Length: 309
Image 1 (cartoon, one colour):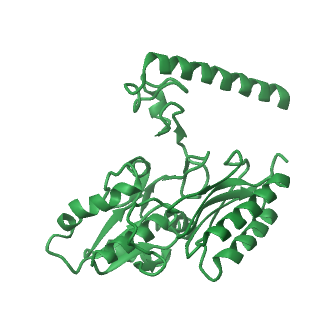
Image 2 (cartoon, one colour):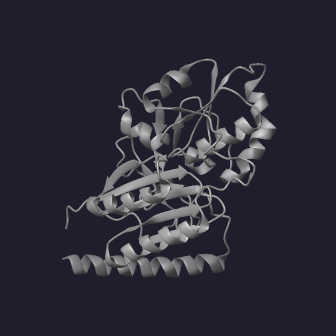
Image 3 (tube, helix red, strand yellow):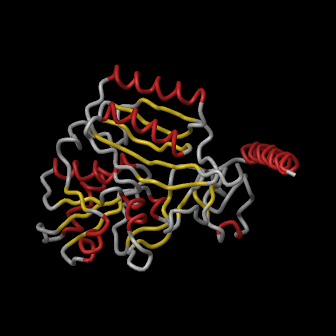
């Protein structure tokens, strides 16, 4: 059990997903979870499926076969990584209006999206002087790592991206209306939806990185990589390095923001209570509550150590 490896699969697919089938698939997966060690976070909506699952490889194969029954011939855009421990506590399945929230109802990525660029062609595209490169992720994700010379829209969430496009894209294009627009994100879903938005607005020469940063890191040697830093992920690992292993970042349990080893050495940092990013965000009452929570976490850790020994 000590060397037990969990397979972690990130996936997404845009396809028409009717409400009755959404509930049918949800119930099937929750029934599997009852008797098996399946964890993760999945989001279902009428536009498709998005999320990450974590389990032993044999169980992952079973779950993917079931999901494929519902997604049909539509590609699931799978990204694979591994961990010695589970990266989620349990399986959560959320049913929403969108599998990634942009808030623009008139776009349809399954019918209108940009051109996929695979990992092996991506470097050539983004090194072209006629290309502008846009990171479609949130500002805190970008702060951990990004591609060289990419534009950071500095958004707090993806639903702010359409406004950024309206207010800023023309400035970056300048007079170069024929410029290539290359976009990327963690796993490919946000940049794919972003290309659909731009095409709907009449922009041309729109490209997006197939499989996102995770697939690029899987396919590209560190020597040839144009990605600098680590890649934020939405699970217990916080960030992955170029070999797709757990990176150097952890989470501030007060504000939920990623913090580096250097951040933890700053005077403002108190484990579980505050970091330099949230030192002025909370009241003394909040901090007392956080302090009590951290005490309970520390007690639990001590018990686990005693139990293991």
